[in-house]
Length: 327
Image 1 (cartoon, rainbow, N blue to C red):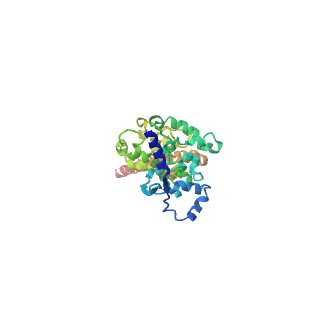
Image 2: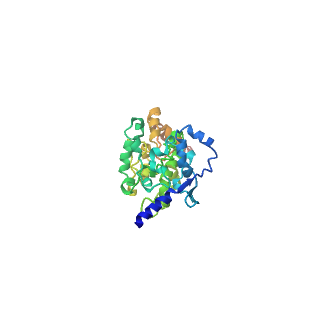
Image 3: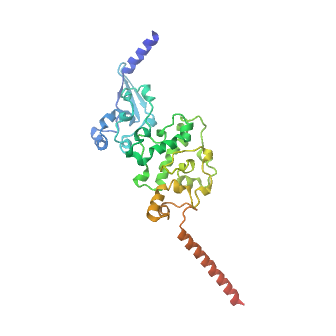
């Protein structure tokens, strides 16, 4: 009986707790108009954003007449500007989250809900066929993330509230694309507070584990992590088959050669455009990046060798002539 009474009391007290909206950054309703241009559920979403777009929230106990101000966990924060400018900007929050979230405080059953995966909405749909979600799903399921990390999902790397397709689609440079992609990996692998939520392994020092790599700064700023840590794929534009660290690429010649693996990964899109416009000459790549040993043009190489031979021949003739005339 005591247990039942305790449960009833806790339910009663929970029902007396309400949420006081904290929307300091949202001055008036007119500020929402710009969001209504891309979303039909702005007003409904405000019930979520009044907490999740702020740094704090207030719990009001109506029964006892007290208030509790708490800081919102940064991982649970989503700004309006961020959300309404990303790929899922037209969605209502409850399109993806259970209606139990309308209850506050949120019940544990809602917090432990199984989130949708990319394939749940985008798989086997001709409208999204060009993204190759089915192939990406197959690659991911064979990756170390899926096999070795419990409860890993797409959203561990691609936050559905702030995910961009790719900065390359927005006309960004190769360098910006590299930084954007590497930030996804480093958000866990260089932040132990997030890393330890997924594994019991000890903290990893990225610089120490890559101490074999010459000129680390240049490499980290010029290639994506996935260039060396995934297996190449012809079916997907961005590889998702992340391999164990012992299988990572460590041979310089894998990248710094005429048949550089970067042509099938980082520069895959540029390579296709280059072949379409200029045949097999790496015109686009030469405009954006230079990979020692990889950027070759047969004609230029022939001209260079010819000029070298002519120069050496001229020097040899000059030396012979000096010797003859000196005598």
